Image 1 (cartoon, rainbow over the protein chains, first blue to last red):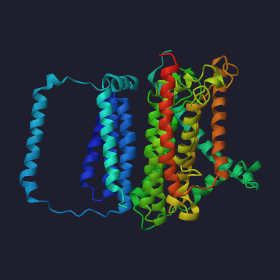
Image 2: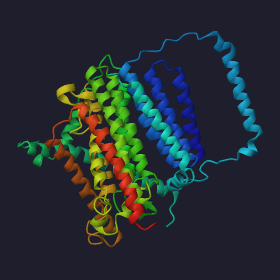
Image 3: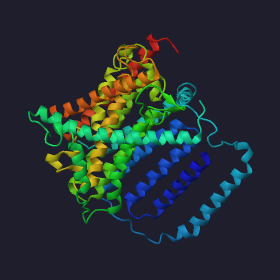
Length: 164
Length: 352
């Protein structure tokens, strides 16, 4: 059951990501991204992170991507013009990406034992336990992060404000 | 009691079909109720010709919408134009699956009065609601019509803004229950009848009013129905839709109303519990099930009535008032409510 769900939603995720790259209209790209994010949330759920899964849908699919589509709708962005891309991308980009991918795969496979393994559906972190960790053990990093986000918001407001 | 897998699947399928049919019927009759009540508020009769007291009107309306020609204008972006009403209706119907309609009554180990009992039920309802806005946003954009686009833009901005206040208003309730499972939230309120409901005993009345206002905005209902303000936008996001596609938007709106009423009942008014404590809450399994469903439906009906009453009474907000109200009033009050609830729980309640 878990494996079947993983294959379905993992496949959906990859298909959405590929569709995001191949679509030419920005709104289709945004919708593919929503598919990617929603199927990611199912993968989180399979790994036992129920709160993260719900937050992923509420925050990313439900709020941030709505803003993306909002902007696309507001600007009425047209179809993307395809170029052949820069030569640099062909010469350095593809081999570079391939090398990086190979390197990462090598490291992960050679050090498999040290990373440990999480099986699908093995355990469930309930929201209460998560909040204990967040608000007791990791209180300072949590609060510092929220201040960081607040600063970012203030910066955005200051930049967007009209001069009087 | 041990159940076979087949029996489990069968009971669940029957349950899901029943819930969907009952939900769609209540959607149809909420429309009738609204027409009747608004008619009375405006000193006229409302539908009265079809059947006794106009009771068959929803069926006739449904038949009419089915038989109408399904126009697709030339300039629309077809895939999204067709997809949008489906998204809207699917999300509206999905979220009812988390709602428990009555006490924990089981048959062959299957919960009879709830489609699925999930530990993060409340978050899932919020998530599905937040996905539902794509139906409106995409319909407006793909219609290729200025009025539709304006309606969709208003709707998405409004829903995102009010979602924040809505989510924050629920935190106090979740803090009191210590759980996101809707059954747990109701069980916390079930000890002393009316007095232990979150609205009264839980001191969450501020949260309730924030929830109510934010929820009216989330469902695009009056006085926050700017996305479909007919005097400014002809019909808003569904201007270009006809026949069944229009009906799907309409059904989605009313199904959302029902879900919101259910959630308000569960979170603030004790769900299926009797207002008189153990009095009138049943003794055997059958009477418990029937009475709990009765109380639940009665409370949900009250909220639907309130929806219609508000629609018949209040004028529409102006757009800047709407945004200012959401961001500058509801959100700060909701945050203050969380802080006060936290202090109250920390200082006066025994640690559990």
